[in-house]
Picture (cartoon, rainbow, N blue to C red):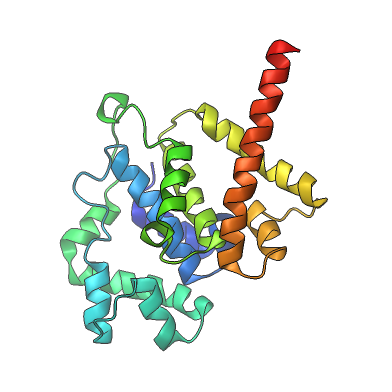
Length: 229
């Protein structure tokens, strides 16, 4: 099981593998999904190691604006890419300023199955919550942020070997369903395909939930046909 420092190093070395490109906003959303899911599973009982970083950044930049650390870093760095690489340097300084946080990040915690909760929040329940209050989970209405959050959610579960639930297996088919619906086989993620056919991130997020409902209804109809056909 990776500790946070190891994961961050892997993302820094190969951002495309985890979040498509070096972007501070993508990284922030990915970590929200990853760390919140670990917490739900009963991991990180002593903290994820990133607590206090928000306040540290605010103090360093001498700002009290109600933005995430990712949003704060973009302004002095000038771009998503520059802020992404700056984050790792700043986060290391943060850890060095607080040796206890550095210990948490470098500690590899191993838990038995009995230490873990039986389950985390079901995927579709999570999506329903995000649909109801996108600002709470994503900061703003953005299909890309949703995609990154879900990638973090999935990685946290894969790390501890939790088997895929029925909902997660079903959602894996959403990618090919979107490709078929739009007649595209480009290797692009479902979020990029939907965004391409939308005016902006906000519209794309709304369209995602419409398409997701259509996807579920179609699967339900197919199941009914198979059972009574």
